[in-house]
Length: 127
Image (tube, rainbow, N blue to C red):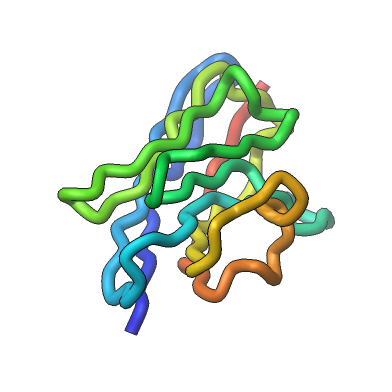
């Protein structure tokens, strides 16, 4: 059974940093996509970033490029999202997601591509 457990959320002032972590287990595939989505109050789910364990290819939402960095530690089965220069508009619940498929530029941000979701961790950025 696949499990995704996020941590690292919290409250921070604009311009600050946070690092989210997602420990995953139970995945039967040797390569897969791992990523982060977020949902702000009253908004749709938004793809933030994804990484493919089979080669390290990454995709980012335009709104976070240059500020967020996604990475994966194979030895620890842990996904990270380093978030710098945070803005109030980054405030949302952040979800760790997984898919057995290789991401593409046209699909990585589609929520239904991902078969497994974590419970989420809240990030609040104050101005």
